[in-house]
Image 1 (tube, rainbow, N blue to C red):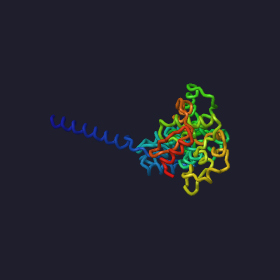
Image 2: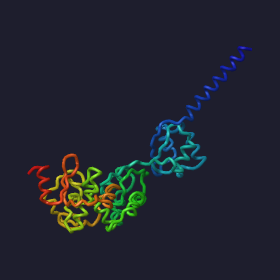
Image 3: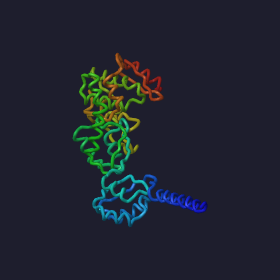
Image 4: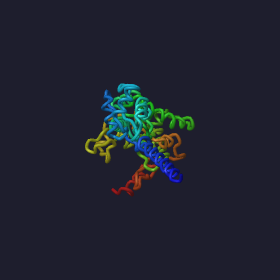
Length: 321
């Protein structure tokens, strides 16, 4: 009797162990992997690819289930996040529904112009960069493409990408215009903020830099802002980048409505997409700040001055002759 009970105990333990092993082998999901299904790809080809990546354990079972429940035409093309050792039924449903669509994480930095954003969108395969730029330029949206981190699926329509970025602008920046009163238009605020964005390195200086440009604008003095010239120059082949470094006197003479060394007043529109802090700096500039000039010193900070003579002395002290 004792032997029988012992045998039964061992048998039950073995069954339990086998059940656990089977569950672990067939049901426990593994690491996340990204798979790509091309338009028009056959069911057999999809099954083979999924097997090679370890997502499914049986090509045959996947193909049979696919024929019973749908067809290869029901599988969406695109990139999908799937875990290894997933049941064929779950994989098929996930791909058909689009619930496991892979989203690319992309970060657009403060101070980028729309061309830089478009380039990244193209490199990541998110959308057609030309279609994106066409919408931005046609609707004058430079300055309203809110700098942030986004999740976009591959081959997202350009209109959807633009709308999501502008929606973030409305959500984050919109309330500032209701909180702070200004005699400037929204476009003028964004234009000054875009210049501040390209000039400022230290956050706490944004209200001061904004005050300088607003002071100049209101007395009719040319802004003489280097970033506006950099914007007018466009892409620099020699440096392989936008925002050319080390502007020359020849650069400062470029004929462009954006060149604030030649033209008084504000440029036609924003030169980049500014941050929340830069827009806030323009709407809430440093109070009673009468400076008209500033020069950069080491560490990214600036020295401000009210008069040109004081400004020249600061330049000489910082840069020498």
